[in-house]
Amino acid sequence: MEVRDLMNPSVVSIEPTSSAALAARLISRHNVGALPVCSQDRRLRGVVTDRDIVLRCVAAEEDPAQTMVRDIMTRNCATVSPGDDCREASRVMAVQQVRRLPVVEGGKVVGMISLGDLARSHRMDMEAAQALSEISENVVIR
Image (cartoon, rainbow, N blue to C red; front, top):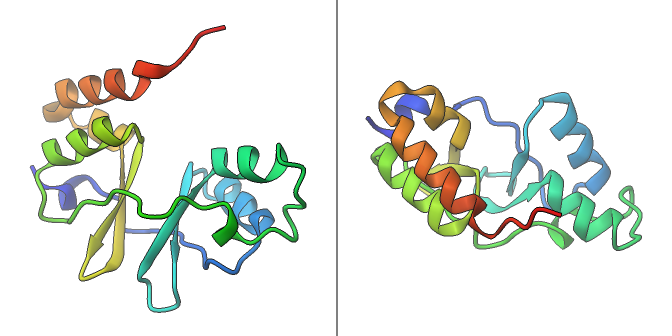
């Protein structure tokens, strides 16, 4: 099964010069955990997550309305291509310890695939479980 078979092609993205406050509103409104950060031509520049907003902006006592996404986003993020096998997406998630990956073709974002997408595919149950195990490997329970 290929990534294109499970990815979400309806991607909400944000520009690097947008505010962290806007990113938070988009994440909430669209019920997603991450937004690809794209230039106007849809080229991937990074990813901003709800966790980035909390840790790099709010906890750092920065004003979300004044903080630009480019200042808190993760750069050089891992990606997959639509034609990649879903096992490769699972492997990348495990190695990078992330739950979501931008799907990029020709340098442009064409979708997102999440651990949840993999888990919902009955053919990928074992791969998703293994990826979750590896992603959660360094989690400390208090």
